[in-house]
Length: 192
Image (cartoon, rainbow, N blue to C red; front, side, top):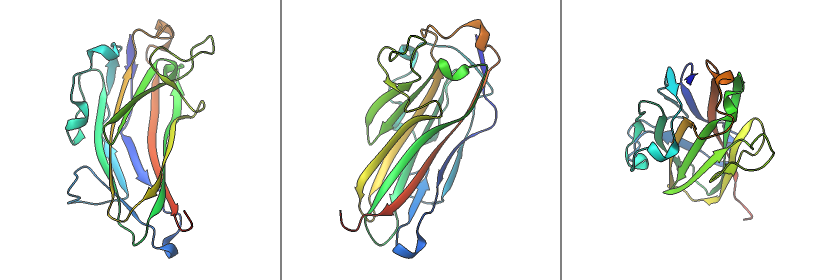
């Protein structure tokens, strides 16, 4: 089984209200030496299916891109660099999928050390074993930090692989690809 992923994986902050003092910076390091509003992780050109049980331990302990032979792994940080607390909204999107490759993809998100694995609902309409279902066909994960204080930092590690134990991981997805991104937006937390 072969999964072809083209391009890079993008993480970006979408500014919503410059007037309110809300600002978020992203960085591949916790020290924020090079803060930015957009990060590009290294993609994997070819990915063969694996079992999630084969992923190495400690995937959330290495900063930046740290892909393995058959998975994408990327660790980064989001920091409130504004002058007031905000509500931080995060969304992991499936931008496009060719040959139904998203049916067997797994997205593991570590947020501040807490790990959750997401997958599309099975063909029978039930959650895949050991996973949380995608929010929709185009959104794998959506979450918030209700009160993201000034100078507060959230750490994220994204791990993406093609799950060989998934019943939808069949020859018909061979040569497929999935384009993904994670976006952040922030609103003023005044009144919270």
